[in-house]
Image 1 (cartoon, rainbow, N blue to C red):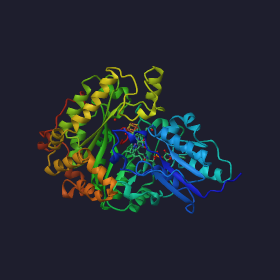
Image 2: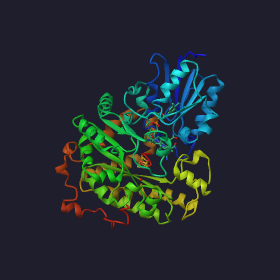
Image 3: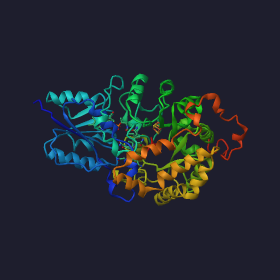
Length: 498
Ligand code: B12
Ligand code: SF4
C-alpha cells in the first residue's frame, strides 16, 4: 500500500567514542554531513525534512517521522543501529546506507527496512519512487554511477554555524588506485569506482558557496588530470583558498600542482603512508613506489602549500624502529601536520579478507576500528608495541620543540610562521577550541583559518609555472630538507583525509 510521506529525518549518528578521552570536539565539528545533504536533494522540497548530525547537536528522538535515513560508518555503526531500532519501534520506515552497510549488509539488514549498497545517487531516488508506490525493496544495489544531472546538494539543511568548514565539497567519487587497506574498492564494487562531475557543474557548485575557504573531500582531487586541470583553471580569479587531497605521484607527475596553487590550493593531504618499499608493496600502494618523497615536500613547499602527511604504522615488515624513523623524517622535511594511523583492516577490503583468512583479526568490535587501536596481529611487533609506538609518534610530532623544528624547515619566514600557527592551532589549543564550540562561535574562527591559508608569497595565488623553478634553484638544493637516498624512502598512502 502506498505510504504518505510528510516528515523525513536524516541522521549522522556520532561514534561511540564521543564519550571517550580521545574525543576531540573540533575534529568532529569540521565538516557537515555532505552525503546526507546530497541524498536530501532527491526529496520533495515541500516535505518536512530535518537533518541532524549527532557530532554537533543532541538528537531529538521523540519525533515521529515516517522515513528515517541513517548514514553508517564503521565507528558509528552500533549507535546507528540503536537509533534505527528506536525509530522502527516507533513505526518509522528506516533506511540504512553508507560505507559500513556496504561492507556488512547482513549485519545492517537486521536493523533496517531497506539497506543501500554503494553510493546513493541512483538508488535513493529509485527507492523514493518505490516507497511512494508502497513497494520499497529490502535492498538496493548501486550499479549506475554518474554525477551528471544530480540535483544541487541541500546545503540549506546544514547548520553552517556548527562547523569550522561548512564549505566542504566533493567533485568526484572514488579513486583510480587500489590500495588494499582502502574502503574504495569494496564500496564501489558493481560499477565504476572513479568518476567526476562535469567541470561546469563543479564550478557552479563552488560559485554557490559563500565565503572564501573550501575543503575538497575528494579521495584524490588530482585523480583525473584533465578534469582537475580544467577545474583549477576555471577557479582562477574566483579568489578562493582551498584544501584537498592527492597522491605522491600526482604531485610529481607534471605541472598540475602549479595550476592548483594558482587556483588557491594552500594545504594538501598527502598519503605518504610509509617510508618502506616493502610496506608499500604489501599495501599495493604502487603509485608511491620509487617516488622521491623529499621532492614532493620540496615542490609543495616552493608553492607555499602546507602538507598534512598521512602515515600508517603496523604494515607487514614494520619493526619497532618505524615510529622514530617516520617522525624524524616528517619533522626534518617540514611536514606541517601529520595524521598517524594504526593499520586498520576495514571489512570489505582485501586487507580484511586476507587477514581474516590467516586468522590475524584480533577483534570485530567495530568501535575499535578507528585507526587508534590495534585490531589485528602485527607481523614484526606485539600489539602493545604498535599501540605505544603510535601514541609516542603523535606526542613526539606535536611537541613544541618538534613544531618549532619542522616550522623552520621552510625557506620563507612567512611559510614557517604559517606552519607554526596552523600546526600549533590544530593540536595545542584543544581547550580553546572546546570553548569556542560551546559558545557556538566556530564561524568566528573562519577568517583566522583563511588568513593562515593566505598565499605565502603575496602573488602566490597567481603562481605560474615559471615562477616555481622547482629543483632548479641552487639555494633550494642546499635547503635544510634532508635528502634521503632514493630507494630508502623514495619507495618510495591517503587514508582519505581522516
Ligand atoms: C569527511 C570525512 C570525515 C569527517 C566528517 C564526516 C562527516 N561529517 O560526514 C571526520 C573528520 C569527522 C571523519 C572522522 C572519521 N572518519 Co572519516 N572520512 C571523511 C571522508 C574524507 C569524506 C566523507 C564524505 O563527505 N564523502 C562524500 C559524500 C558525498 O559521500 P558519503 O558520505 O559516503 O555519502 C554517500 C554514500 O555513502 C551513500 N550513503 C551514505 N549514507 C546513506 C544512507 C542511505 C539511506 C543511502 C541511500 C545512501 C547513503 O550516499 C551518499 C551519496 O553517494 C571519507 C572518505 C570518503 N571519501 O568518503 C572518510 C571516511 C568515511 N572516514 C573514515 C574513518 C575511518 C573515520 C574515522 C574513524 C577516522 C579516525 N581515525 O578518527 C573517524 C570516525 C568518523 C565517525 N563518525 O565514525 C573511513 C571509513 C571507513 C569505513 N569502512 O567506515 C573513510 C572512508 C576514510 C577511509 N578511507 O578510510 N571523517
Ligand atoms: S588509499 Fe588513497 S590512493 Fe589508495 S585507493 Fe584509497 S583513496 Fe586511492
